[in-house]
Image (cartoon, rainbow over all chains, first blue to last red; front, side):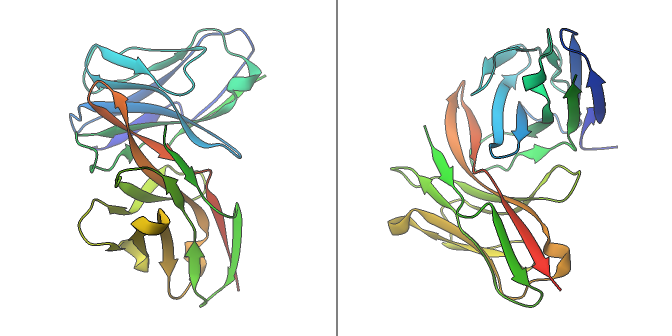
Length: 113
Length: 116
């Protein structure tokens, strides 16, 4: 199906474990983004990518790693999960240009125990 | 860095009443502005966007917003609330973040409650 998908939708893990959240889009959009959503903070940008093999930090990158070997995939890895990373994570993509809307995936709810 | 302020973390209106959700942004140049809606356990869906064409922007589900440069505001309105409008609403502004990319800076969101 066309669109932007995220997996898993729900994940429970323990402190110190490595976790990878997947994001896949079928539009061949150049730009992809990872946000985290926390109560009272809205959405905050973690990392973004302008194209395959081009990534950069956003507002809250500490504790996260990204890669983009293919245009359609943009995985987010928590190398050693902490309780403060309990959140809802959204992936988004857009073609180009600041007037273009970002299209959001359904989100991954991550709980770190 | 841009900032977006949404006045009121929770807004409650009666079904059929006017909906007004407030958004103010900080920018010295006219930005691109967006309103997104989030229904429970779902991602964000675009309601409408301002891209420097008309200052009054019409969106989906009967919502509209007016860009007022002098007030740095982009308030969202709907003449008559419906129960299905209950959701979280986010105002966002574009911001250059490097590499030719434009990110979105979001407000903290307003939870709209519709009273029967």
